Amino acid sequence: MSKRIGSFAVNGKKRDTIIEPHMLLVDVIRDSLGLTGTKRACASGNCGACTVLADGQPVCSCLTLAVCSQDKALETVEGLRAADGTLHPLQQAFIEHCAAQCGYCTAGMLMTSKALLDANPRPSREDVKRALSGNICRCTGYVKIIDAVLDAAQKINAAREVAA
Ligand code: FES
Ligand code: FES
Image (cartoon, rainbow, N blue to C red; front, side, top):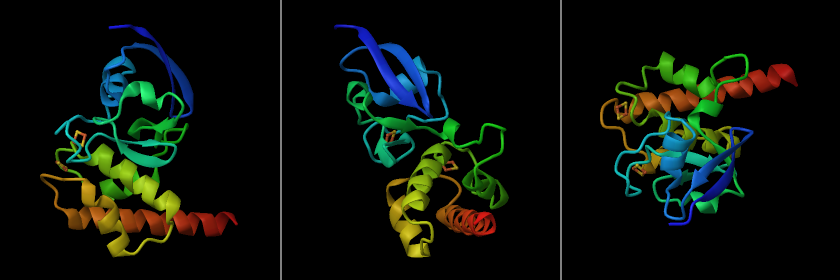
């Protein structure tokens, strides 16, 4: 296997690490870059736990070759929090709505939801259900998660209106 330096733009920072052609993005993110918020579960594209954003689009990092991600702006759950430590409204809403239990699905849920709210700031309940249809939660159930996403959308929009 030919090892080489891979360069990744993750959460707005350039990160270099040694990669091999067969390496999956989830493994580079977790094991090489130490961003263990992203979870590996089914490893077959069926659960969404490994979801990260690539150029703003949710991707299953367990199905994505790391070498193909070097020209993309990658976002992981670690990038959601503001520089001063303030949680993203989605993170805050997940806490307030008890939308996580074991938390294994949570990073993927948050990243898929962020992509939704970035593209559609005022989603309907159906929009949220559709967006999260590829993300599986084994313990919390979906009502609280959907409530949290809708609440976060409302708070983000209210903050934008105050700032305008
Ligand atoms: S771990 Fe990637 S979709 Fe399940
Ligand atoms: S909170 Fe446990 S899998 Fe979703």
